[in-house]
Image 1: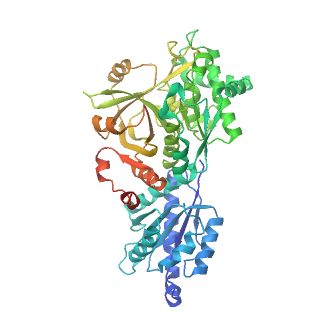
Image 2 (image 1 turned 90 degrees about the vertical axis):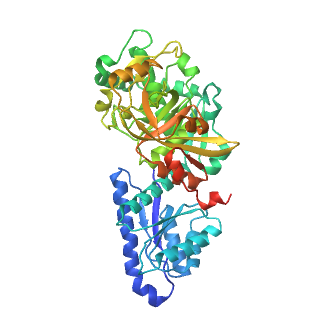
Image 3 (image 1 turned 60 degrees about the vertical axis):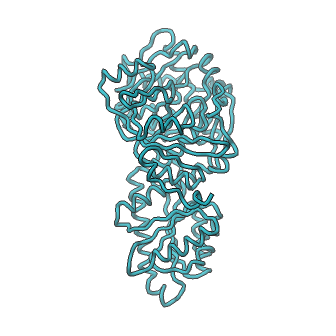
Length: 497
């Protein structure tokens, strides 16, 4: 997974008789925070480079020197530690070494012996009054709650600084005129910095013709070995040939992404591909999966119907979760008697969500490939069907109101329903498509009031706080639904609008 470098530094007292006495202890605090952050991020399976300043900031020249060192090391987010009183003006020659848009976290102890909190409020206050967006956390590296907040901020800042330099590949344009899925260039570029590059689906079709047959057969045989009789060839819509065409599409998009340097993508599908080439479900699933027949790989976010809002949301969810596969769903049907949603669509539910395993054999035990519905998808291929495994999820979606971006965020749970109940509910929509039977941490009315599109995105785990941090850093208004939303306190830069 692409990462951006995290820097840590401590602003100190400028009086020589003071900093000579405290510098060693202060450096130990900074190094300890670096160790704790590295350990926690490594546990999640993906740790960015972490750089500690060579010394504490004790003068203008030291601030400039340390700032230049960190900038040269590629630092894209800065944690400014506070352990003692410091001289606030020294922060300016430090942070100005990076440019105005670097995310900054002010992190202080809560130690009565030294006035670190005083230093934080004086220095952070000076930066904020000039318009810098800075988050504040106070507590010890020995306190799990404080550490959790810091890790949440680091993941959020990484998501924002990584996507800032990325390009979204649009294969074909927004499908069927779904304008909530259009790439709204200016507000997205202003908030997140990323842009988009549009490629006609014809090029994907031409590249499909260049894919070696041996590699295509390798993929087909892999599916056949994993699925057995659950690969339901019917001699018409789902055949060896139509499945191989879907595999070719996957390999072609993968090749094009690599060739053009596209970091995430979306495939229009309907109607050109689905009526003349193949259904995109298998290709989209494989792109989002953490594996294929050649072994483990990094998931590549790919949105069905080239939904740009979905793809952007998925890419942020991927980064804040440390690289997990993400979900793309239709907001399909609400069952009021059960207070649950059936999130299903013919599209790219990553197969990871069948069992939450990085072993494809475990996930594919619960998956069936059905013939595509000829009514919608005349070109044929496989529809991927499974019910998502139970677990905590974070659902989200970026939207726009009058040109301004916002993001709806709602904690959710994928439910472990009895097999008969799942079958009964699946029959009410489409039993050949993937389903997430989800309970949202908000009411139906609240969801209906605020949700901006027909497509929902999600990721395994509760990453609500991380996503809120990311929105605040990017200038996107977070709208958290349910009880968590009642606890939300907007940052000062939102309050002062």
